[in-house]
Image (cartoon, rainbow, N blue to C red; front, side, top):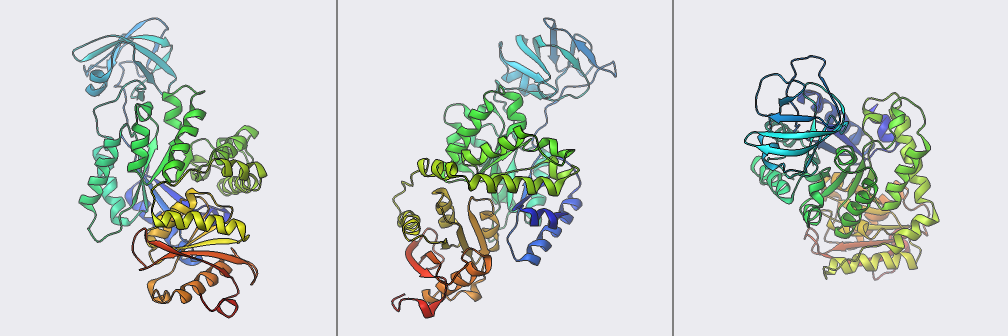
Length: 475
């Protein structure tokens, strides 16, 4: 099935560490790597950490208790089974962080209670939205920043295992503030050998605190990518706010040149139906129009009845939107500015401009760490971006970026002392991938010399795909 999903259009596979055993994850990783080898095409693997789960205690009544609107209900640290008047909340940090007027949401927002009083080890709340509360139901705290790590002991074990098997991206759940990103980066450096290629970090934005002050800007700056996790975000924020927050996150990621993924309930009905609702198709299209680098399926492909059809449907929606003149106009009017003043940025800006004016079919970047290709992606050129790298890890990281077709080319196949030979390699790969179709098709090629120096892009060439016999002798 993984091979079918790849052929249907999947570029990244997510391993959800909230479920299953480590051995199962390794088995899936090996299958994905085998598909990658079979088709000689980089595939990224995203390891998704579960994050802390905040839950109530248990009740004396196994069926739970029905709470009515207006009644008072207490959360405390008493381990005695709960009643209609109180229940254990085994998270003192929630009690400490909550203030009068703060809301607590129970069972994915099905119930809402407002804090009306607090004391040592307890919160008194008024029931605003009534319902039945049962054992170990989830608790969300939209108004509070909790003094807890977003990495539980289980997450730390899972993180160490992810590093041992070599995932390409790690998604961090329950991010509240920039310090959470600093913490996981420190842990990765502790567990990861100095000579190993570290995975990229993706922050899942699902807490309102991410939007306090300049938290979002700093989180995006510290991360390698962002996921708009609309599940919990939709619980803790008003439904009408989520589309606006989605656009805010995407805009910030585009301004900083970081890939952004829109996730959760993209084609939810396709868990049981072979076709999506029109609203779901419109939702997926909107994420693409907004400028997302990727859209993600969850249960649709992991546990649904139509996994392959779900991926094919997303690919159809992507193709349709990207072929729409409105999409091109939107991208042209909303391109972020690259203002770092580096020669590499100037080369990328020039490459996009040259490619447009000579009607090139492809922009090709020779890159080691991927920075040049990511800057090219940030500008959303009309042409596909062929990123050629001697590092498999870089190619897998770039699978997350908009418009980038990564290609692994080992050092032994790259004569980095002869730029003319490198240009011919770009032509061969472009023709093989179908990014250029005719000998007369033009490619714009960028590279940096000395090759291997991060951010050293300083050369740009325009070449016909036919090869050296058709090139100007000065190349």
